[in-house]
Image 1 (tube, rainbow, N blue to C red):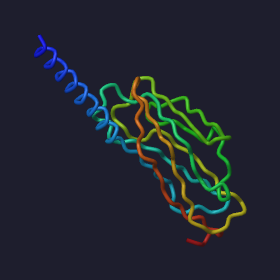
Image 2 (cartoon, rainbow, N blue to C red; image 1 turned 180 degrees about the vertical axis):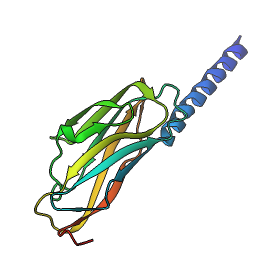
Image 3 (spheres, one colour; image 1 turned 90 degrees about the vertical axis):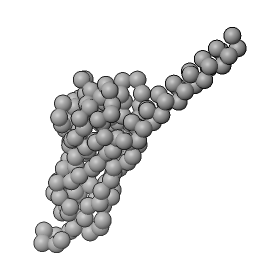
Length: 167
């Protein structure tokens, strides 16, 4: 009887390790990318950022929500409004809190394909000092129904130029 209990305990432990390892490896595969409609922005111009996800192929039910924090240089860009967050490819109902710059977007039927999720429009200020502008999505979390996953941050660098002819 003791032998059966020991074998049962080993079997349960092995199953737990295997299933836990699967969840961790699926989480590690999800990647977030941030792309921009232009590499340079001038005073008063807008730039469209697109947040995309990849590595969802191993998920069984798909992703149902994405949450993150938009990090940008507030000295170079105007504060975006909730209307500047446009969902893409079946994602919907974006919510944006300008006070803490956090956003969330949902998808009712789960995303197992990946690709573009959200378009964010930033507008450069009228008083613009030439600089390299870091823009990123920090603290990303994605929900697969019952489990949360944490893809790495997505970031890019834009050039802020002061005059129309500068590059």
